[in-house]
Image (tube, rainbow, N blue to C red; front, side, top):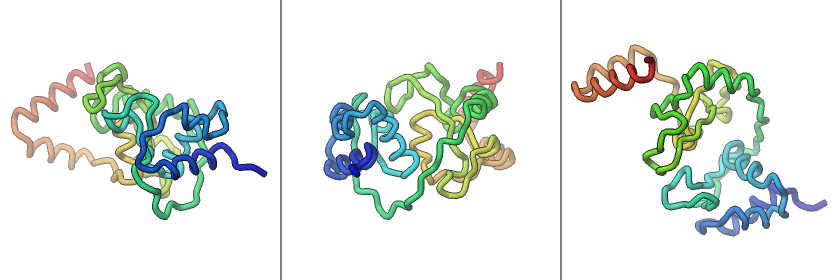
Length: 186
């Protein structure tokens, strides 16, 4: 029995560690399957491979990917895609279609990549750390924050902690927070 498309992509990425590869190269390496991009996302999101794209680094163009280093001691776990469309919609609606880490919304230009913001539903406590696919453990994140939060995100801050941080900030920063909140909730 031959290798599946995900295994073929793994082998290709390992053989090209540190080299920028294109989507057409990855698709060809997969055996030209139509779902090659989904297999690549599974490697990133479900198996923890640090495969960078234009959403992660401004010097990468759309359709370019980079595995900077070999994955180290990755657990052999696979997670099912169990967040339903209804639950995903509930999270986006509850969070006002706004990234809960940096505050950007769809259509904004991401200052890190100079591209339009795309929103995702991410876990507060990552699944690899025991987090569940339930409303209380999900939040809206932009591509950049979602990728940056992989397996390192701490618990959501309490309102008391958040208010303490705002109180400690200078007047200009407090005004910026006030204006952001006013615009968000108007």
